[in-house]
Image 1 (spheres, one colour):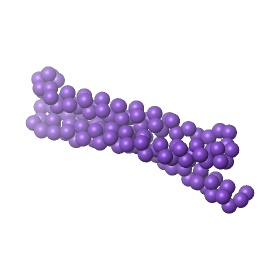
Image 2 (cartoon, rainbow, N blue to C red):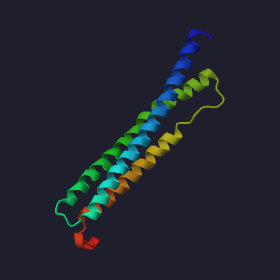
Image 3 (cartoon, one colour):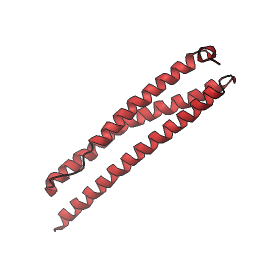
Image 4 (tube, rainbow, N blue to C red):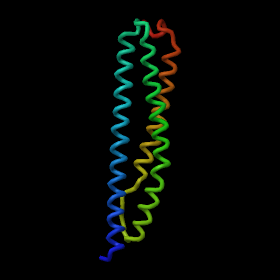
Length: 134
């Protein structure tokens, strides 16, 4: 194996590890955001008679909008990694390799889900407390 081929293998390995890191990070961010949102909503519905509980919804709204934007940006940032992996697959003559599509699919789905949760939070914020049975 010559030096260039070894460098290509190392780069390929690094990019695959980067892909795994991004997927893990996306999953952890999703669990974190939904955990915070669920906790705040549980607090909101169990204490909706308190005066400032609606302010807690704003925190979740900001989280979900930011995570939607980050997920959308992540799709754009992963494209060069995918292109380089495809180049290295051709250079190294690999028959099978991991696809970046699941990460893109997860990020796109997460972005849509975050926006839907944000929409529900906006609706909850605009509703009167009597509409919720408080």
